[in-house]
Image (cartoon, rainbow, N blue to C red; front, side, top):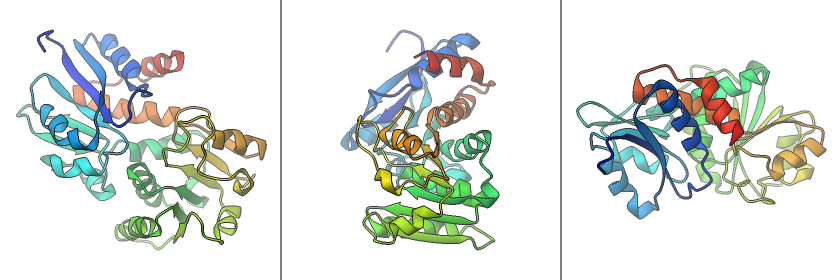
Length: 279
């Protein structure tokens, strides 16, 4: 490309729904940076070539979304300590020498989003739905923030168990942790006592799909869906009397951190928020 612009983008499959371009392009314009942020639809087979392309000097780097946050690790030159701990990367930064470093901005964004929503993490009984890269970020971040109880519910029990084993190995305290299969008869009891339920699966992008039957949603909990739209899960939670939170604030917070990594300038968070809200 010869338009003289620096580039960043989101790598995933799918990415057509992504609102990241409107945020980052508004931020670039605000700071007068000659750059553009794009959607880069990338199936698994094309991931190595897409990542290698980021070594070119025109690229700031990229965001990484489902399903590539774990697979991309082995394609990078360096991994930030927090991203290495989480075992997932959602932000790639190209340095001046062309080396690629992976970061995880989801983890700090999860904590900041929940605290801004008034969640008392030091007393929270948390249930995370899913064991993906986003679930890993949430589990590590919340365990590090001192939640006393953390349950991971996943279709494949072994993945949930592996995630919690990884989390526990990093802690100097011993919270209650449990892995539960999605079809476990004990699931209603587990959810009954939850004060925070987080959907870290991709279920929710389609209008009626949901990771959790409405009858299982605890009315006293905050239900946080990382999908940044009104989902069936959130509609069901509201009908049950639960507090609800979608993923828009988390999206903005992780994007702001990524922008700072790429550009070295303070992210215009209010500008980014206004742009994505208008969109």
